[in-house]
Picture 1 (cartoon, helix red, strand yellow):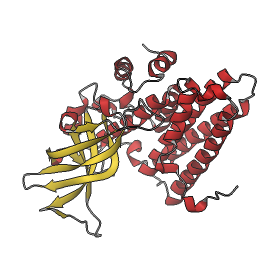
Picture 2 (spheres, helix red, strand yellow):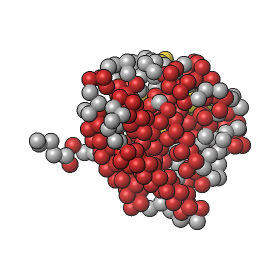
Picture 3 (cartoon, one colour):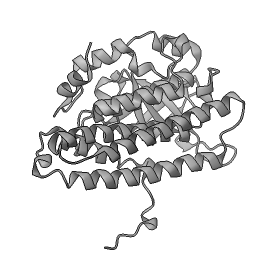
Picture 4 (cartoon, one colour):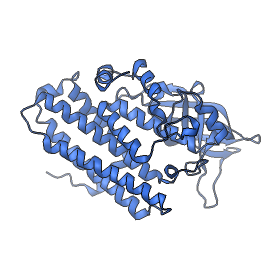
Length: 343
């Protein structure tokens, strides 16, 4: 059994999450927080899962990011046929992960199979995956298939790790142990049963009804808040004479707000009410503004920590780099047209 201190020691300066930590993750079934209990998962409620994600991000940025993205990919257990889900998730160490981008094509065959080709970037947890998930354009005789509205038809697919070529090309300043690599698929045949569509579910649960945008927004927000909480903990070790209590209070306040939003979302869905587009936009705008404020405050605090905080083997430097690497995610990045760069 590993505690927070043990995990931080394992991941300080690491370029990969160690086997010891991965084994602990599987023992605790943390990759299965969103997997229904009938498939051997933990079946967490939304608020309960967000609390776990915050805690993991607070422990270590790479650790939390990998768990968030891979547990998020395991959520797709809800989108695949029950007999396939049961088959895949009987493996206690099953770990999905992949890319949200559309990076290739799936050539439809006459025998209910597809031939997958393409490359995809930013598959977090790549060294630890049992299956890669990917989005591909559906083609037939080399021509892109469109739906009734004229949009390109996109399906998601599940491919065993043995059929993917991993490209270890993560060179970012932070999240170094997250294993966020690219991968290539070449002429791999995938049965239609191993394809799925995001908004089509084979389970019947409140979690299925949460709009993907809201799910993504809140799961990422608790990661940023968790990393911020760890950052201020390390900052206090370097400059204990500075009072950072207001920052700590702000993190707690916003974490509680995120959890309240999650609770409200579940309550609305329990009453068979939809999460309106207006409500979704309100949640997203809150996230954009919060990350902008949080980033500014972390940068301000970092400049108060002195030269010791720039030592590349220090804990505070690692957390700082992890935060600003994660903050580059496009989800909450405001339009440059809305910013004033003058000074």
